[in-house]
Amino acid sequence: MNEDLDLQFRNHLCEHDATFFEVIERHPRLACPTVQPPFESLVRIVSGQQLSVLAAAKVYQRVEWALGGVVSADTVTATSFDTLRAASLSRAKTRSLIELAKFAGPNELHLKQWLRAPWPQFREVLLEVRGIGPWSVDMFAMFGMGHLDIFASGDLGLRMAMERHLDVPENQKPAVYDQRALAWSPYRTLGSLHLWHSLKPDHERFQT
Image (cartoon, rainbow, N blue to C red; front, side, top):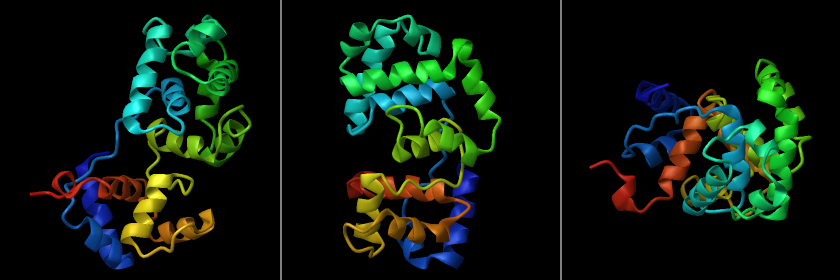
């Protein structure tokens, strides 16, 4: 996954969504993010739920420190509730991390088995884990598994960007945003990255 994929996405938009193409025409080429280790990615996502990017990064650093620098199912299991809680986690997020560790299993073997399953099936299983909702599994698909065709209609930033730049009326049901994003398939992850980028100030957003 590299910036050549961004060019493919732009060519796709020229044919299927000219309005969005005009929005991103002056954006720099964006590359899909480097895929993170799966369990580490899940911990990042849970610890950062409902926080800004900067605040989420700070909380994750505290969690990493609480786990002795090694973020794994085994280190979470070996760490007390109070120690995790002291890493700026809410009680709900602390319980969620513990449940994730139980789900992943020793050496994360159970999680590794599910990583080989079809994503729709794995997605439904993850949604059964305490504290893991649709937004979390969509973020995991993007950043923990590297799927290229994911759109998270539950993400406030994506909805705001679509309302601001793509003439989507405010406060619609998730299905409205999902339907609008279908035109970007099979590059919806890149579409999401450009929507997040579109919310930056112009001096950061546009390529000079």
